[in-house]
Each structure stands twice: as C-alpha cells, then as structure tokens.
Image (cartoon, rainbow, N blue to C red; front, side):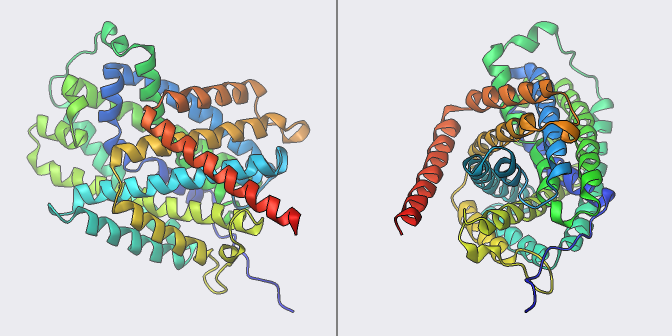
Length: 415
C-alpha cells in the first residue's frame, strides 16, 4: 500500500527570503500610504515605526516556533501544538479570512494599475485565475516567478525614490507628527501592518523548505529587515514630496514621479505596482493553500482539501477553492475595506503566535519573552484601533467560525 504524496522540500534560504519579500513588498507599498495619511497625517511615520516593531516581535515569535514545528500551517499548527486545538483553529481561521481579503485587495490594486478603465474587475479575475494555475504547477515555479517580480518592484521603487530626491522637499515639522492624535497614529499603524504581514508565508511553507529549523528563522528576519528599510525610505519620500496631498492621492508613488516631472517614469511605476500586486497575490494563494491543507488534515476544514497532487506536490483542491472564493470576492470587494479587514484577521493570528511562542521554554527559546508580551499586546491594540467597520465585520466572522466548529464537535460527540 503506497503512502499518500507529500509536499517536496525544494526551497532554500534565498527562495524562502524572496517569498517573504514578494509577500511584503506587494501592493501595500503602492496603496497603503493614503489611508494611513488620512488617519495620522505625517504621524504615519510614527505609525510605521510602531507597525514595524510589532511586526518584528511577531516575526521572532514565528521564527522561534517554526524552528521547532517545521510543518505547513504556520500559527495554526503552532497554536495547536503549544496552546491547544481551539487556539490553533482560531489562528488558522483568522489567517484564512484575513488573507482571502488580502488576495482580493491585491487583485484589485493590480487591475487599477494595469487595466483600461471599465475593465478592472474582469482583469482582476483573470489575474487570480492565472496565478492559481501557476501555483498548481509546483512551489519551485512559484519561487522562481516571485524572484523576477521582486526585482521588478525594487527597480520601480528605486525610480520613485530617485524622483522624490530630485525635487525640493517639504520639511516635516515635529508638530505635524502628532496632528492625528494617539488614536490616529495607532490606526495608521494598524493599516500599515497590512504591508508587513507577508513573512508568515515563509512559516506556512515549512514542509517545503530545506533544513527548516535553520532556514525559516533566517529567511524571516532577512525578509522583514529588508522590507522595513525599503518602507521607511519610501514613506519619507512620499510625505516630503506630496505633503498633505498624500492623504487624498489614489496613486501616491505615481504622484511622486509626476511631481518630479518624470512623465516617462509613470509607466515604470505602474508596471512595478502591477508586478508587486501579482507577487503578493501569488505568495498569498500559496500560503493560504498550505494553511487550508493543515486545517483539513486535522478536520478543521473538510478533509477533501487535504489532498496533495501526486505529480506537482501541491494542495491543489485547497488552492482551487481559494481561487474560486477570491474571484467571488473580487466581484464585490472594496480595496480600502479589504485592507482593514485583512489587518484585523492577521493581527489576531499573530496574537496567538506570540502566546504560543511565550509558552516555549528550554532549547526551543531563541528570543526574550518580553518581545512576545509586547507583540501580543501590540496586536490587540492595533486590531481594535482599526476602522470600526473592519473590527465589526472581522469579529463577526471570527465568532461565526467558532460557532460552526463548536456545532461540528457537538455533533461528533453525539454520534
């Protein structure tokens, strides 16, 4: 009797780091500055610092957990192992609903930059379908395509930075950093966290990384540190070039290039934005598929989705279902609402990651517990500082997922 096919360990350190970069340096860097500026003005720089530090706390927790539990599923698997089945389920459910919203946002941002007027949603649907097919043909193809996309995005961002440096800047007065108040800064941090959350994609692919206990922690730290530097530079350029107009800009980085008079570079920025969106969407579909696979294996999703393709070694049923759900969401979604909703779900996911890492001891412990305490508190604060519509919708879906699982377990016990 042959054993069922498993995922292939084919990713090295560079592959894993590029998957993290492709997930974080995505559409967020092109789309998130305006809503953050609306919340906090120039204070988004403080919000960026807060979001980056909370992301660092979360990344160290994920790295510490991944070194001990090198399996697919990320915090879903870690929560089950360290805290219990219910904690794992809540983490996995929050990840899935949050990242499905992220997929829709990425597809819509791609279409906003790449599609002719009136064709945005059909192009977004086509993008989801095409990238789902790429993922179905194996994770090594996913990693190779993400490398190309990351290079394109970095070149585009380099053009934006050069354009911003070439024009007289608007100095940032210290007093303007606090115009949005403490709550505005926290809300900006919560929205900006959306752009940092991609390092989880590395951890969710634990069964496909070579030497995972060593590779995953290193890849997470490399990807996050690189992203923080890039985002800080881009944020300063956007604020000092556009000033208060940043809050109302639909395409801030394209407007930076326009302010410099570099009309020739605007298509470059649009291509980079489209590529960034595709890179993030590609990695998101792969990451959600692996979490869905782990949940299906444990019965927290239908076991039908636990199947791995015998030739391509990917969770093909889960990824097809994800593509169908995202396509349906794209037909109805709003980009800004998707960002807030996604941040809420992902912040709760990392809350559980910090709690799980806090429970580890002995040789498993790589980082101080203080980082996990700060990370857990920070995740809660940022989650409930988000726009109330995102909080209400996110909390309702979390409660719905808990209720459905409780009903299923009750029926199992009755039989």
